[in-house]
Image 1 (tube, rainbow, N blue to C red):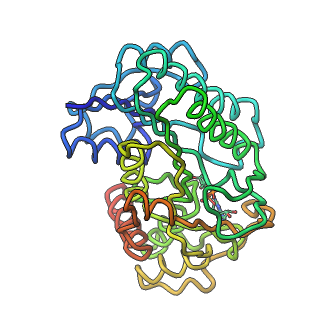
Image 2: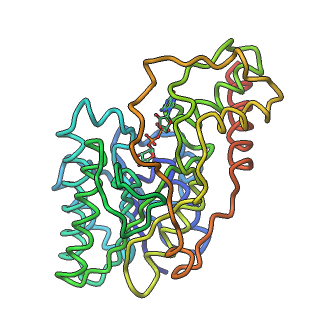
Length: 320
Ligand SMILES: C[C@H]1O[C@H](OP(=O)(O)OP(=O)(O)OC[C@H]2O[C@@H](n3cnc4c(=O)[nH]c(N)nc43)[C@H](O)[C@@H]2O)[C@@H](O)[C@@H](O)C1=O
């Protein structure tokens, strides 16, 4: 039975990855911060996975976890994820993303040079790429401290692969969502808002730029890609994306249609949430993942948003 260590198992992606690996009989160990032990995404995993403690800002704890667990497969998903927050504290962002990735990759090599590793990087590494859609070889000009930190991690992976022959793959993940996504990200904010408005719990939903565009897929599809990448014989970089551009307004329309409410007059643009426009359209080209790994998204946009709204309706009803 292979043993996998998942950093960030308390998060959206980590918990779905644990579900997937448990299904195929993998022995799953999760790395968490002490304060995440009671997180909502861990409850259903209790008794089915082993948890070890570690902190991205404490390199010794990461080295100890990798050395003690001695996994065959290491999925490094833990990271700060809210892009605007990276402007408030770039130092911590860089340490927790670039610093921790470098520690984990070194620990993997010291523990077992044959250990297979997958690291989640991000479409934020592209920034003002100047070309759209972006594939693995597109120019990378990040526009946030978060993107800079992810790019450092991304480039380190390629370098260590080349220098030491480490089996490390990078997932260049575009936006991915699910019923486990926290509500400060715009899709969950919108599905939660539509649900609350339809239940009469809220009058309006305050958002930033409705014309902002992203490439959204379902988190369950993305973690399936992570396993395919790690288990492929040759390590590499892979864009995981739908290849379909959509706007924040498309999210609003899909979520409100699901609850049968007209969003007109209910959605208010609030400057607090407006970010500077992207100079290059962020859109993924997942051709390599499809051709090399046989990966394609299976869960469509409307299904994903519908499931998120249903989860929000159920949670709000239960809370009320
Ligand atoms: C790939 C990447 O994906 C995620 O980062 P993100 O794209 O910043 O995600 P988000 O959901 O916060 O924003 C998406 C878009 O929606 C616009 N937007 C409009 N109105 C609101 C609004 O009211 N709230 C928010 N949050 N965004 C809004 C906002 O300006 C942006 O254009 C992370 O997983 C990150 O870790 C990652 O790697």
